[in-house]
Structure formats: structure tokens, C-alpha cells
Amino acid sequence: MDHDGQRAHARLIFVLLLVFSVGLGRAGQPISIHVDATQRGEPLKHVWSYYGYDECNYTTTPDCIALMEAAARMNAEPVYLRQHFLLNSGDGTAALKWGSTNTYTEDENGTPVYSWDLMDGIMDAVVASGCRPLVEIGFMPQALSSRPQPYRNSGTYRLDGGCFYPPRDYDKWAELMRQWVRHSAARYENVETEWLWELWNEPNINYWRGKFEEYCKLFDYTEKAVHDVLPGAVLGGPHTAGAPDFLRRFLAHCATGTNHVSGQTGARLDYIGFHAKGGVRLDDGHVRMNLGNQLRIHRRGFGIVAEFPQYRNTPIIIGEADPDGCAGCPSSKFPERAYRNVPAYGAYEVATMKYSLDLAKRQAVNLRGVLTWAFMFDGQPYFEGFRTLATNGIHKPVLNAFKMLGQMTGDEIPVVSEGALALDAILSDSVRDRPDINGMAVADDGRVKVLLWNYHDALVEAEPAAIQLGVTLPAAFRAVRLTHYRIDDAHSNAYTKWLELGRPQNPSAAQRDELRAAMQLETLESPRRMDVANGNVVLDFALPRFGLSLIVLEDVS
Image 1 (tube, rainbow, N blue to C red):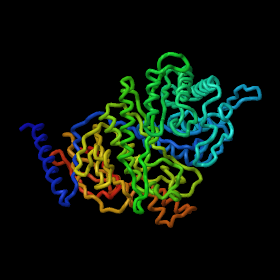
Image 2 (cartoon, one colour):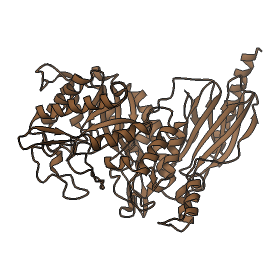
Image 3 (cartoon, rainbow, N blue to C red):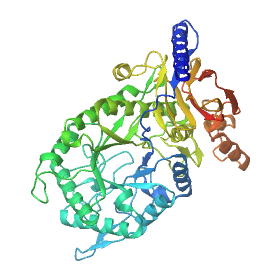
Image 4 (cartoon, one colour):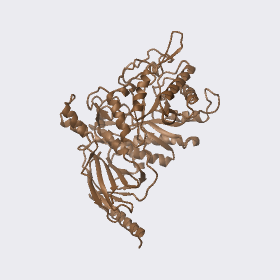
């Protein structure tokens, strides 16, 4: 038998042994997971490097700048940031679920007056951090609103202000677009090739107080104005809440409808956006998430896009994809949102990314991004339970999950897990019976990386899962250096440390140092060398409920 034949035979024996151990696993033995690094596919798409938040004026604060810089560092692909309220009238004071730049006003004669100072501060901070803008065009300046009074929402969690109404003058709106895009292109490099633009947020609910056809009209005016200045700019929409019939009707307008500006057929659409929220609730006193519902909305949105042959290859950005629908509702007041400080949030996010990619492949659509509508809230108490990635500059466990995802560079390789739930089962029943213990893996010419999770919808205590991970390695690998990163209650978890410190709201310098040490991505054990036997390595370890393990095997032959 030649060398290749020996390796193939060894791999077959190895897989058979794993299959045998699967049978044992059902009787209490370790759950077997097999990764084959000799079967490299396409590069793994990094759809997760997209983030957003309501309060655009937070962008210039020290904590937000530090978090943007961290996001840029931890992702191998460009990071895009999206914010609400970029065109709102006001003095630029940051507030919960509100923001303003006062970009557009009019003098006593009705002549437009443009002011870019506050907008420049926001975009300067994004660009300087190493991130890129996903520019949300909205909402309506007071001087252009068809219902300017009352302009501001009547409450923090209400959407009834004049900023959500159509313009009283579409030509003035279009000129505002031209001025904004022209100013941006003059101030920043590569705006035409690197920035993304979108019109509005969730126009199918109260963020838009106009009719459907008025949104289409606004899109047509916006599209022409943006592309008059930058023909190569990427502009998308409609970023609906969920994947309702509004999305289908909008795609039909862009594909075959009458353009409100030119009178011709259709409107240019560079990418398609919609949003999806899973849903959380209290069930017998514990939090229950709903990964299945999250993915069902993704599937429905992909299906609507697939109905239009002309959009089969058009990029899709799920512009908000989150376990629930209110980032600004803290778990201190809304206990069903208590997942936000603990590792369950990160496990949910990682599983969402993997299964969203699987759905996109199944439905033959072009998924570009899955945006996490969570960043930070300035000036709020530590670990108050907002949907954030960090609190007062302290990284939460969920941000460490994104650090793990950022390391997943390379070509996809197959993962077969005895503990995995079938995608159709998750779509049908979510993760309500046994947990989903699964992963994704990549390989390049010198490393293999395996990211595993132990996820369940219910936030209840459970025994850790015993894992036996077998990895078939390329022929060149004779020895590897193992680095095993872990997120759980005891690792990469500043929230646990904060609890241990007595929940301080004014931590001392020493306590801040402890929190900063605990927020780093930690290893489960010291890195070590492993010999490769017959082309394989085997690892045995426990993976707690909601735990995440990133195993990196680096060739040191």
C-alpha cells in the first residue's frame, strides 16, 4: 500500500472508531466530534463583522472609540458600523434611543443650510478607529418633515416623533443627499468603494410614518442622488423589521415598478437588507431564548429574495440580527433579557452565524452580513443588562465570542458532531430538548481552527458535555502546537469577576485591573505540543452548557 493509501486507510479507521464511540456516547460516553482538515472547501465568509447601535452621538465618546478600535483589531475582515438618527435635528446631545447632528436647517427664506460639524465628528471617529460606515440615511430633519411638530418622540420607547415622517419636499431631500455624499467623498478616502449606504430603518413599522409608496418614492430620489455623485457607491434597503410582505413589494418595485424620478422601469438596488429577532421570555422563572425563530426569519427573508431571479446574486445584509428586539431595555428592568451578561449570548451568536451561512447555501442566496445590533451605552451602570458588547470599557463574554469568530480565517472544513441538532430540527423546534453541540472549522496552510459550542435555549444549569474531538490533519503535519481558548463561567468572563468583587459600581483602580484581566480571551490550559499519530490528533475535554471552545492546531513539524 502506498503512502496516500495508508493515510486514506488510517483516516477510514479513525472515522469508524469515532462512529463506534458515537454509539457509546448515547450510553454516557463522550460526544464525538470529527473534523477533517484534508477536505478544504471555500474560504469561510466572515458575515459577523457588522455592528450597530441607536445612539449615533455615543460614537465620539472614549469608551465607544476604544470599542471600535477593538472591533477593528479582532476581525480579519473590514468592520462596518451602523447607527440611527444621523440626520435628526438637535444639538448632538447623546440620549438613550435618540441622537442628532443638525445637518440640515433652513433660513427664514426657506433656503437650505448644511452643517457637517457633528456628522464629521461621528464619521471621523469611525474611520480613525479602522472601521467603516454602514451609513443609515435617516431620519427626517425637522425642516424637511411633513409633520415637524412635535418632532421628538414622546417617550424613550415610543416612535411617534416628526422625524419619522416623509419629506415635504423630495427635491430638497435629494439635494441633501447629494451634498452629504459629495462632502463625504471630499473628506474621506475610498468612500465610493468601501462605504455602505442604506435608506431608513424598519419602514414597515413606526419608524416610517408614511405609506409604502412614499418609501419607494424616497428610495428612488435617494438612489438617483447618491449615484449622481458616486456612481459606484453601494446603496441598499429596505431594512424591514422581519421579512414581511413589505420586503417582497419593495423588491418588486425595484425590479419592475415605475421609478418615481425617471418614470422608467425599476430602481437600482445594490444590496438587500432586512432584520430578524429571535425572541426571549421567562419560562418557569428562567430565561428562554429562541434560536429557531431567529433562523426562521432568516429563511423567510432569503426565500423572498430568491423569488426574484434578478436578485439571486445580490448581497444580503441582515441589518439587525439579535436574540430580542430592544437593545436599550436593560435586564435590570426587563428580567427576560438576563442572557446579556453571560456566555449564553455568545453561544447564541456563534450558532446563529453558522446556521445563517448554512441556510444561505441551501437557498442559494448571497449572504454578506449578519449585523449584531449591540455595542455600548455610555454612562450606564456596570452590567446593567443592556444588549451591549462592553460595559464601561469592560468587554463582556459575548465580545470574546466575536474575538473567536474573528480568528476563523481560512477555508471551511467539515465538522461532524454526534451532539449536533439537524438544521431542520432547529428550524422546527428550536433547541428545547437536548442541547446543540456543534461547531465550525477552517484550515489554511499551517493551522487548523475548530470553534465549538454547547447551546440550549433555556438558561438553566446543566452538566458539562464530555467531548472527544478528533481531527484528521494534512500529511505535512507531524506535530502541532495546541492552543485551546475557552469562554464559560470561569474563563474569558469579566461578569463573573464583577460578581466576585461584590458588584462594584465604582470599582477601584485595582478592581478595574482585575476586570480588565478577566475580560481577555483566555486559554483553558497552557499551549502544548502534540504528536500526530497516523494523521490524527484526539482531544478530550469538558464543554460546559453555553461554553465556547476555540482549538487552534498549528503545524510545528
